[in-house]
Image (cartoon, rainbow, N blue to C red; front, side, top):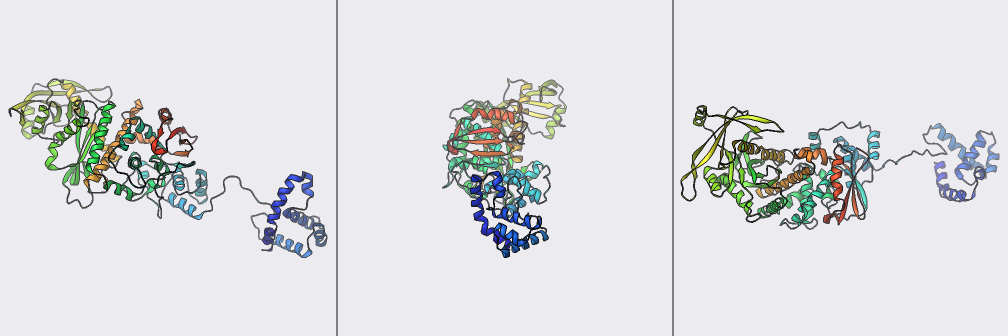
Length: 609
């Protein structure tokens, strides 16, 4: 203790002496000097132990009192006897960043690694908690604590990561855009901002009827939902881990994304009129940009509710293989672009057959008088024969499947005039099918003015890989059989789109039995899906890929974010498809985003992967 007290007493003078000597002494004079306290101690003990001088001589030579020199000898011997790792005189300097001594930070990192989070994810969460750290600091801490390298995680494992407890998420607020830099596990999300600007979706959101909050504006509010949808996060799980990624917050112009309660509260303020109005404006946008053809595929899907759904109707769920309490939703998708143009989850059994007419009204009121639509394609249970007649009266062509009964199958066995046709299949292949067609009448399929039965074209198809023949009904008597079959076969695109909504966007994970809240969630899902389709159109070789495949190839990327005075620098980590993505993104380097403090975004590749 005497030694440490001795060092503390002379610490301040030592610093002054060092400063003074550095400016006045020569190298030779430094070694002759006796002003440095620790150096004087070293020289005195060297003379005593190595040169065998007496204590009186050494004390007199170096200006010590004899008792003080004896105390120095005692402390030195005690230090050596205890086998201390630290040298008595010289301090060992370890190069590199000094370890973070904050025990809370250490516990924070260890807690996250126990939940199988990667170093990059831990760093981005740490920045959200205002910890100043880096990739290598966290890696070294984990290595010191005995954690092995994290094994490769599957996509399912990543989506099932649990939030560590306790985990207090920061509060979402409007970002001040002060110069700073941080890490993010979702830097790929920013690739959608040029798409949002290019098609004017940001202006459409600003002019929409959707509400804002006291702390979060309208644009940021919608982008909060989009950030979760575009990254495939299960928004309805009970953790707030997305709040720990500052990159996702910046996407919406915020410090971080809000907590779960905010999303639920915001959805409660949205009414059906807001959703319909927004879909109509989107429809105008798609139409003006030539993204809608003359054909629309329509289909139903079931959105289950796992709570007390006594007020909901039972609908058949193909994914679950049974009927369950749920909401019945309808989708309308363009077969060429893959854009989902329409959706409604307020479908009940009593008005199920009239959905096709409701869609026609929607199409023609946004924009008003639009007569581009010529074809509607749907399956056998979508509507009834009476509504088919109304479509025909309205000069709308349709193709649908007819339900097959036992008597119909017996009649098909008697057919002899089969015709072989070759229909285009996937790629450049063609498939040989046997078809037979004739004009028939159906009960309820009547002329709206005369009430007389009208004829309809029936096409029977075999050789398509099914045991029973398929029966197509259409009011198009001019199109060839091959074209009719090919046109209907593309209806699977809407089923594929619905499947993506369920699997990637988690459409069947609803948090409320309120139809309006689910309807709003579905609108956000549609917008996210369409953004993926628009992004895929920028890469000719990837147009056919699903939303999840586009996400894995281009969007699932981490990196660094550097907010500067006039721009935001996004550093994307190396990936196989990154050069193609950067080629597209750099075309928008000068675009300024209103919700990002009028800054532009500069996209670059980092040196790491």
